[in-house]
Length: 449
Ligand code: OOG
Ligand code: NI
Image (cartoon, rainbow, N blue to C red):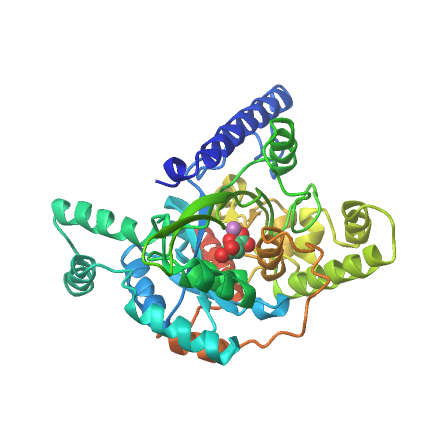
């Protein structure tokens, strides 16, 4: 649907395919003959390759957020994390709906970044107007609510009902080129904040971007520029590293699209609206709270340094991040990333033949002996600052976040609107790491690690 609505997104997908095929081919050639080292899995395409992406929607009321929560839950997607967008002056806060179980993520890790308009941050006249128009909006058809209710109760639908569920659900995210307000009203909302106009002027919660994952984001960025696609100036997130962390992303700028607005005389006027874009991401390892703190510190240091320097921001960023380890062993040993441990064939052999002691074992010894190995856990979430950067650059404002403020987070208020609490992403990664240790313990038949 999005590809049909935004053909440039289809072009982006083609570039990602092209780049990933080349990267894959180059890696296969490189690994031939030498044989891959234990941690070098780069010759293999990630199993989630090509299906993986995230999208984003923006909602106007607690009712809409609660209902979306129910809908996403039947698809196995749950709210993870809280994102405060008021730090960049946006009257919004958000969560990411995504699978949380390892097996579910492996099957399909689709995520939807979902923002909610904060009525408490709007000026009073705008708030009254927005509440009036949003109270008349109905994103969800009766049939959709019926089917979601049925699923919640009975946990299954017939295949005809499933098709219907998908068709009804798609309507929520569809683009509408006819606004529900007059152009004057739109401009008034826009003057309060572009996000207010984008959320409150339309009858649907249109997808505002979709984001496939790529193996080489810098190459995609370069190709976009070469093909004349209006790409953003730079890739957001950490700089390119051998051992990538969190995520890096870039996009093509939002398109100016034709929209019809009600006119005061009762007819229509043709104007435009700018909101939808296409994005690409490259994902790295999930960092611990300690790893995140180091990332946050280096990023703000880079902003400060760039402010006083004439060097391009990417150069400043790269040199500032030299302090971030770029080696899996060091990242793990210093407790900066989460990893999934796995018993090796040697380990399983050794313990089976009674060579290994069955009591309590030391993790670093098991690793040293080659009885246990590990893979970094992929980061499944979003970056608050990066999210803000994506927002701002699409509004043609200064993408260096020079107008970042203290922010007014209201996690409790958000969770009240949502109807449930949001999961803590660090706890989820930690659980995956602990579960993997427990699996090693069981597989090796030892008392503890
Ligand atoms: C969401 C922006 C957040 C990302 O990739 O950081 C996001 C929005 O524009 O509504 O998707
Ligand atoms: Ni995004």
